[in-house]
Image (cartoon, rainbow, N blue to C red):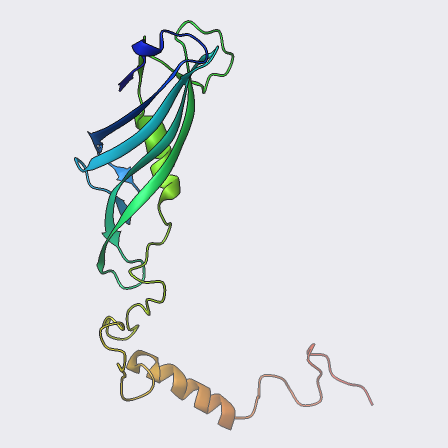
Length: 188
């Protein structure tokens, strides 16, 4: 919550604020997010306008998660742009989705959530060229660049490869002699 009392609701008045606040719970997506209680840094400009207070600036902090390809833990920094108009409580603005002030207070959490989620990668990677995991044994390929398996095909598919070999040897006897592919016989 930010107190805007100093702006005295005079259009054109502004102030800049720098502060740290603890991150709320569940700030992020399933694979990456801001740990609850981590400190977030805010660098904001509050500007009084006719309808309310325009908040612009940035929020930054640490994110943790796991690589979408190799599942190793990753840690990174984020910088999210914030911009929102908070209308005065008595405003008759027709927009139901407009953010409203609570007296002289502004609640930044909903805007912060939207901005952070948009700033996070959908599929975070430990490195841009992460090779992922071996599909046969699950080994992390970045740790073992020369990783190989002997034997060629997966044994779970061995029975199917036998069926393919049988189909190549046996002639197709599903249609009677002298018929076309529609099953009709040719007349001489």
